[in-house]
Image 1: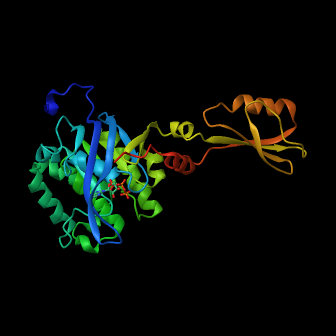
Image 2: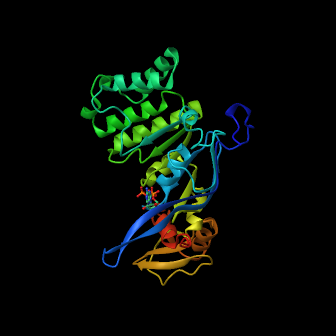
Image 3: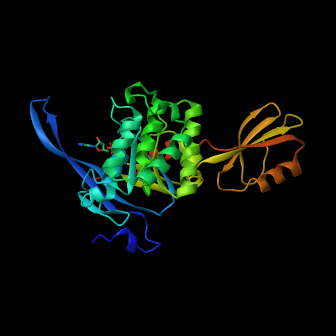
Length: 334
Ligand SMILES: Nc1ncnc2c1ncn2[C@@H]1O[C@H](COP(=O)(O)OP(=O)(O)OP(=O)(O)O)[C@@H](O)[C@H]1O
């Protein structure tokens, strides 16, 4: 049974996904293309997670992992073939129209704006579609246009906008009706460094000021590092990690590196808890687990050797995630 937002308890998650499943029936050619057989693709399965109001969560995974399929089920575009999903207390596929007033969606590679209309006309149409009150519309439009620096583009047809301007237009369009949740799919794809930075700043401010919940799908890990305290990693249709970004290092079995510059060349340093990986003249690279403290290792090195300098290299998050993907979840059955 769906419960309206107003009577949901304060602790109830805004997004609640339990044992979610979606299969697709496909036809496949076999026997060198002579015969076609029906097959079933398990795009999402055994997927469970919840998101509290105000969280900013990164939803990441390799190509074909099931990210878009999940987002489509969260917006009601796709009906699950199993399990449970609710957003703002609503069943997305059944209460799709009502849910549309509570969520905003931005697909980086597809615009929801009207191609031949000036931005302003697209926004005016959205005001009518969502029945946004004139005062709220004026306030929101003024605020987003200022923050996203779109003032000079309001009278330009969407097809003449640059990718970055169009993306800012799409984000404004998705936010005019004050959604509680914003789903962003690859929002910074193709943007230059400055535009990326500006967009990330805007999303942080939106979350700070309005408490908008953000579910962010991206292949750009800097988006995640800049915005999300929590990350859900999906692979082969199911979650393989759900936790803080920092915890990925532990999960991915990654290590940190202590770079030691000795005063003189020496045989490989021997200290408990660290292993020498490389020696070049007086410089040695020692690796130790990412979740261990560097302090005792630094102290042990300094106590036994003449040290000129010490520094610590953090593991590369992209390597860690690559490692997680390569381990992945068990292959789905069927
Ligand atoms: N309409 C469909 N019909 C058949 N198979 C589909 C359909 N949509 C998705 N799939 C399959 O479901 C799986 C998950 O696809 P999905 O698009 O959700 O992945 P994704 O993580 O969003 O990938 P990407 O990062 O490439 O966008 C893939 O194997 C895909 O081929």
